Length: 241
Length: 241
DNA sequence: CGCGGCCTTGAGAAATGTCAACTTACGTGG
DNA sequence: CCACGTAAGTTGACATTTCTCAAGGCCGCG
Image: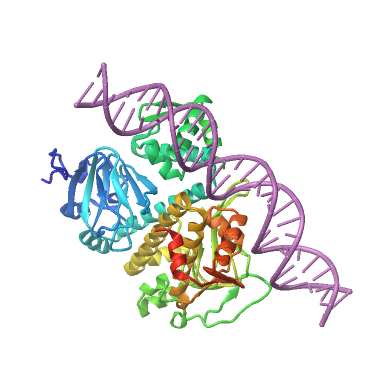
């Protein structure tokens, strides 16, 4: 039986690995696989665990592996040489991380909290995808989903005010959490204010001020590691459109 | 033999249609197809021609077709209800237009100049892709390429100054034109200043002022429907990173 | 209890947006 | 072929949002 192998030296974990018992299989790209095919997937998969704040993909590194995220959340970002950072997305459980048409990664990724992932060597994964049309199709569907979200986010970055950006971010994130853990009035925010700012093209101060204002106006209630939505209709209206 | 069918009533064209003689086949998704498979592709393809300024994809419409662009250029954009517009990309010859994981389009597209396209009914195209792994793979590669460009553009929209945006836009566009028509010091700009502004998250005035300044500083020379690069090193330096 | 990281708040600065006038380019029709 | 009208682009003066810089508060952890 495979085990979860912690990539950090500090801890190590023994966990069952069979895809049968995977929490996120229905969400992940593996959902496309039949039981017999899942065995092939299992045979090339390595369970890994990543500690909070750890970088597990670095821009410029060889793109020799891909991941599915089973547990935890991560930030995906690009850095400019002067330190400016653009977070291009947050990965949640079920997400596929490492789609890359080139041979080096064009983004970095770090763990926001403790992660459990399935790691695949890219060669092996690609070979399997070429032999299993269902997997290739699912992967393509995943890529076009990401592209759609990216286009949506471009219109947030290019054409929306700070308040609209924050409202859009919260509503979209709530929708994504709902897929993983069911709908809830509390939206978990495992990322810092700085992360939110770097995702929305704002500064930390503008994020803070905008959230404070939304809390003052009783649209939100800030809670530890998240926000609780008090007035859903107003929040959605604030997105604009 | 198929013919180019003009969708507008004003003109009509008779053109040879065989993929053999297609200028952009090497660039387009069809590059993945073997001669025998190309015949299948030809059998489901409709040549269409679109007049300048015409909208050929409208946000919200059923996403029942896809295109490859053979000639001309188009803008792909999203509108907000109050009229704000974000152009998410410009399509050039060889590009695939219409990737969409949902059943309605999430963007609109209009012709910047006269277009010639291959149009495919989505059902038929998807069916073919499912039977021709090479096509599916190529499509997936195309989607991940687009995703990469989208992530790059997010970091432009979120974290770069007006000058950096313009410089990045020009250098990227030049690279893309080079694939189509070879490298040249003149960068064709079939889009208006307003289009550039809506692509870069700026206003028309800021685009105009920035281009004027770059021309005054002898980095560019503005020519009809384009710019000529006078000082490549400085232009690239202006991108920052 | 004190330190450090993260967050909030305020005051002033700066980049970009807005509004308005003017110029240029271009196509149409007299 | 010129004159006009319209659309696109440029430029200037001013407004505004967001950023920058700085101080202070909160909270968890050693």
